[in-house]
Amino acid sequence: MQERPILLIFDVDGTLTDSAGLTRVAYEKAFIDIYSIANSTKNINPYGLTDPLIFREILKNCNLTEDGFNEQFNRFSKLTSFHLKRELDLSDKPRLHNGIAHLLFKLEQNDQIYLALGTGNVELNARLKIEIHGVNKFFPVGGFADDAEDRTTIIKTAYQRASDYYKIQFSKQNTWVIGDTDHDINCGKAINANTIAVATGVYNNEELESYNPTAVFTDFTDFKRFVNIINNNEIPHTL
Ligand SMILES: [Mg+2]
Image (cartoon, rainbow, N blue to C red; front, side, top):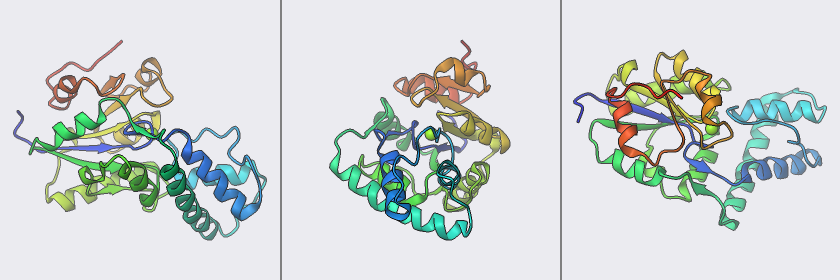
């Protein structure tokens, strides 16, 4: 096995978890609480966007102004977390994507591999979504929508926080940003990291290939291929 530290920054929605549409339910319930408007997320594509950016889209969708945006967002975010927790508690549909539980278990056993979250969720929501599956313990640090509205800044924060927490200056060559959308891929490239795209979200392999990540996976059931890729032992997958 390799003798250099490798940092893996994982997205949450569509990458680690399938929250069975409950995030959208929580957003809409929070929006009804504050603005008394139903179906507020209709026609909005939230995939790969950060929570504050999604909230801006919802405001626009409902012809509401962004006046006092931070205050509006904070109120919305608190209520979203409240509803999300309730929805997650009540439903048996949320799940980890295929292969994730085994992948995390195996990665933890490798003392040269370090994990972080890099997600457009506020931290509380990200933690709620993964805690129900017992995998928070794998991610002591991360970058979240509490840190920035812009996903690239979130990923930079995840990298810096992981470097500080683990007390390791990870090389960018050995840093991997892992996600299910073009936004994850573009942010990884923006910090000069390698990227892995996984087709467990809304995009298929061909669509993800078009953004030229370092590698594309259908899902993470092939642990050996994953380890080969992050050790740079395999030629990047092309269709
Ligand atoms: Mg995602």
